[in-house]
Amino acid sequence: MSRPASAPPPLAASAARRRRPLVSLTPLIDVVFILLVFFMLASSFLDWRAIDLSAPRQAGAAGSLEGALLVEVRPEGLRLGGAPVSGEALVARVEARLAEAPDTRVLVRPARGVTLQEAVDVLDRLAGTGVRDLSMIGGPQRAQ
Image 1 (cartoon, rainbow, N blue to C red):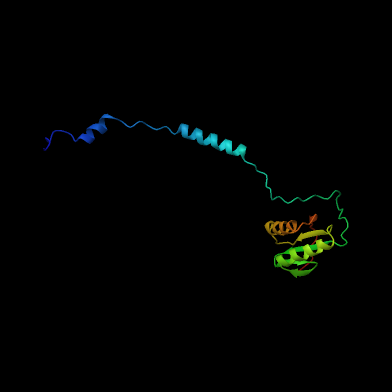
Image 2: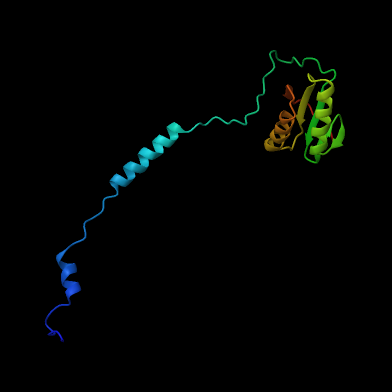
């Protein structure tokens, strides 16, 4: 059952006879592009967790600050009315104040050196307590 030395092996002969067809990537790229366009158009880019901040109606109009809570966001921590407070205690004290007076105004003042994300985190926590009148203020900072 041995083959003569002059005959090529059967696998090599069949591989030489049929060539593999070239696969074009163009249809695949077209499909990926169409899917990309579809998902871009079908997606919503609105952030449902947005915090609504309103600009003052007049320049320099601060409104009534009487009875307002001042929350200072500093690099070393939070302060409520000048006294250091933790995040959980801040939320508890604001909720207690809102139970007494639901229209309490809450002002958030980030200090120099505080990242925007830290200020937004505080605003987000306060918005979760149900504060209706929430403002972020700036202005001259006292020397520390």
